[in-house]
Length: 203
Image 1 (cartoon, rainbow, N blue to C red):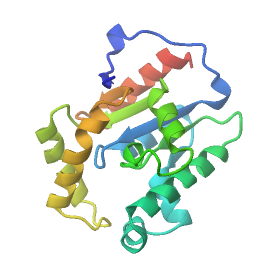
Image 2 (cartoon, rainbow, N blue to C red; image 1 turned 135 degrees about the horizontal axis):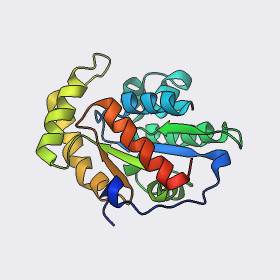
Image 3 (spheres, one colour; image 1 turned 45 degrees about the vertical axis):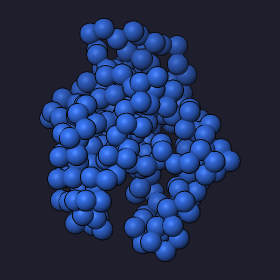
Image 4 (tube, rainbow, N blue to C red; image 1 turned 120 degrees about the horizontal axis):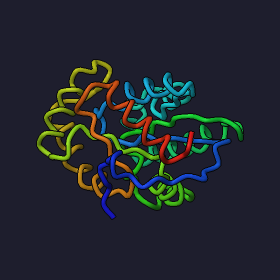
């Protein structure tokens, strides 16, 4: 089932969620503006913003160096384990925003014992938001490559980033979750997501 572009005006309201532990997931292609959006939303909602990439760096070290030394599959295994650890660290009455790594939803399904179930739970949760700068592949490439190359801490280049987008675009586009465009001001994106969360969870 393809991801759908959220339309507040026509959105079907889904409520009756357990609000004691409200977890909002942001998934995205790298360079889709997720960090700024998530942190701004966290301030608006007065909830913590937990970034899986930042959690990896704090607990394991530099991501690029880890991948170069151990391989991408080893990174994926460790990242899934860290996600589980991060989520379990939340108390039963916590609300939080979890920002997943850009490749988190496209690891091999057998990469870790619980990964497939975790992926399906995230994908099908009404409070999972897929952030994309555009629905058009070429426009996505243009925006994302420019953003990624502006990040001095990344060991990357234009060809590498374009290849990532081309490889992941269709997979993410087909995920069964709410899709939000980030080709507007951050405050406008945050407000749109806030309204959608209120409709879905009756906050």
